[in-house]
Length: 257
Ligand code: ADP
Ligand code: MG
Image (cartoon, rainbow, N blue to C red; front, side, top):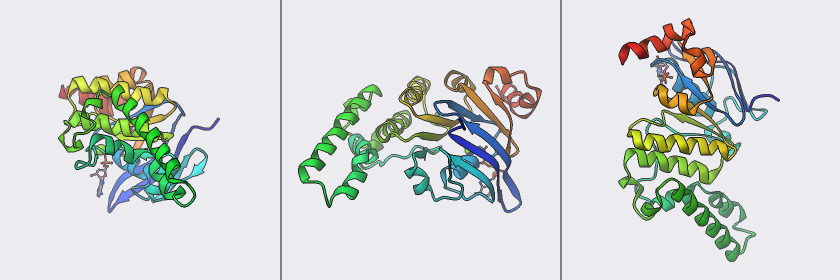
């Protein structure tokens, strides 16, 4: 079985800066894989390339057997590969529930099926989405806030809403760039549990994150990047004694604590 995501010899330069070079790694279906490494290692650029927000200079990105390298983000997303950003993105002026419903398949159903579905059928689909959204918001502790504008949520709650929306939309794979940015430790635990439940529900996660205890708790395996390319992969625990990883990253982390 090939991996769900296969990245092969990926390259991307910005002017003279080789942000990603010679980058090859796999993400297995059903895994939570961490992408870690020092600042400037090329992690965010790799996520941008895989999700179609940037076009590679060279290399192959294969998702579920399809060559998606260079596809625009909306086409990649349509195959079920979506991303979150370092700063959470919710529609601040819409309610928490409306944010959930925008993530739901019914939005697509309506445009596609408007011509053939009766009003009653559309209402039924929307009701099903609302029922699902209520259940998910309940799981994430956000149900009591469902009628509040999403802009009023704390940083951590916005993150939870983003994850709740992923649940609602059920893509095959999610790329997350630093999901703990701006999140307090209590909500951090909830976010970790939320990410684990995405995977329990059949999704696959690739996650950039600097918080190593969190990575250790949530990610079964990690890819360590330095200077644009992976230098090691495996369970974080096993990599702690890898001299290349210590030199490139873990040594700095320990030194900075
Ligand atoms: P990381 O997410 O691992 O911190 P990035 O992918 O953000 O690393 O950056 C990798 C390198 O590419 C850095 O040297 C960064 O300054 C550079 N870089 C990233 N994006 C751009 C851009 N849009 N224009 C120019 N240089 C960039
Ligand atoms: Mg980054």
